[in-house]
Length: 211
Image 1 (tube, helix red, strand yellow):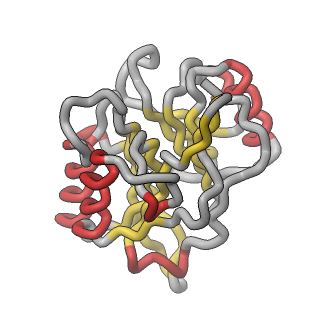
Image 2 (spheres, one colour; image 1 turned 90 degrees about the vertical axis):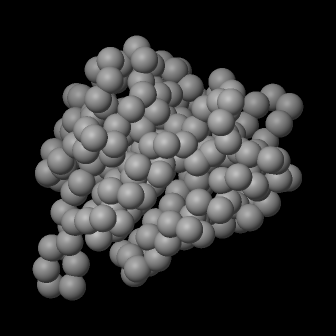
C-alpha cells in the first residue's frame, strides 16, 4: 500500500499536481494538510475524508476506492482526520489507524495537541497500530531540521512516550520558501509495524504548494 503526505497550502496548482499523481496511481492513501479545494480529488478513483466543513478544515485523508476505511469521528477535529483500515498481515488481516494531523504554528499551547493525545489513547485502549502524517510546524535536529526550537523540544517527548518511531531520515527539506528551507513535516508509525513500512523518502517531484 502506497502512502503520500503533503501540505497543499490552499494552492490550486498543488491540488492539480496531486490529482495527477493520484490518477497515475502513485498513492493509495494521501495524508493531506491545508487543502483549500477537495472536489477535484474525488474524480481520481478515491474519496476524501474530513469531518468538518471544507472551508474550516486543515486535515484530510484521501483513500482509493479499493480500501475500505472507517472514519474515527470521536478523535477528529479541524486539524485532525483519522480512519481505521484493514491490511494483509502475516497471512491474515490487521487493523491500522491512519491519521493526518496539522499542528498550528501559532497555537498558545505547546505540542502535542489534544487530538494527538486522543489518537494515542484510542489506539492504546484498542491495541491498534498507527501511521501519522503530521505537518508539525516545529523544528528539531532529530528529524533533520536546521535547529531545535522550544515547540520541537515539547513535541519530541510524544513519540517516545507513545511507542512511535519517526520515519524521517536525512535533512531533505519539506518546507521551502524563497529565503528558507526546513524540515517541519513528520511521519510517525508504531514500533511493531516496522516490517510493514519501507522506502520512506521526500519526493523531488515539484508539488507546487509553496506558500
